[in-house]
Amino acid sequence: MQFKSIIASSIIAVAAVSAQTTTGFPANYLGSAAVINDNPVGTTYSATFDGNVTGTITFTANTNGTGVTVDVALKGFKDATGPFNYHVHDQPVPADGNCNGTLAHLDPYQRGQTPACDKTAPETCEVGDLSGKHNAIPNTNGSLIEFHDSYVDNYISTKSGIGAFIGNRSVVIHKAGGGRYLCANITLSTSASNTSTPVFQNDESAASSFGVSSALALGGMLVAAVFAL
Ligand SMILES: [Cu+2]
Image 1 (cartoon, protein in one colour):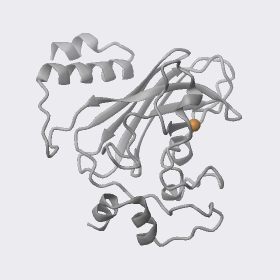
Image 2 (tube, helix red, strand yellow):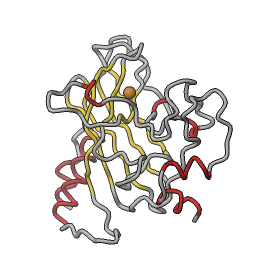
Image 3 (cartoon, helix red, strand yellow):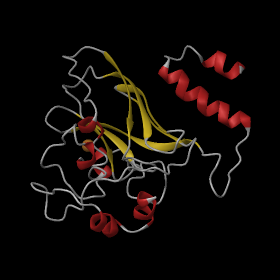
């Protein structure tokens, strides 16, 4: 209940209500990230890579509305040196594909990149710092790797209109040293079915969305089976 009122209010209100240590953080740091507990259930966003890395990162709101499950299924990384950090960045990829156009990490609480994210206190990390809060993609030493990961992140959100919203932004994968390696837009895959202004989706389009993400995750082997459903 308290979080709902925080979310509905401005970011200034978050800073005022949150009481935590800000030692070592920038002076304008607004404090720990709120757990988002009213994500629209059934909403899925995804970022699909189709180049030197192929695959998808899928963001699905949990069924109780709290937190977002992130499924990472990526393959490639032969032509670059890791470990590869990856983040949600503030802006989508511009038309020219230049990853620099995605600007900085998603960081609605203005904590910045220093000090480094502490996995044991993810609420104090940049909201978009997925590899910092969870796992980086390991170095490949020039060989092909497939990276799979799945985790819940309580601070990113599929609810539009708040700072933690990940839709219409992008994921950037970085090389060792921080240079931008690849980027992909985060786009809506499946709409919520229980929003206050319902958007009805027919079964066919829902099945198509499901088919695309599943097929990518399973190496394209289940396309026929899914569409047969
Ligand atoms: Cu980044």
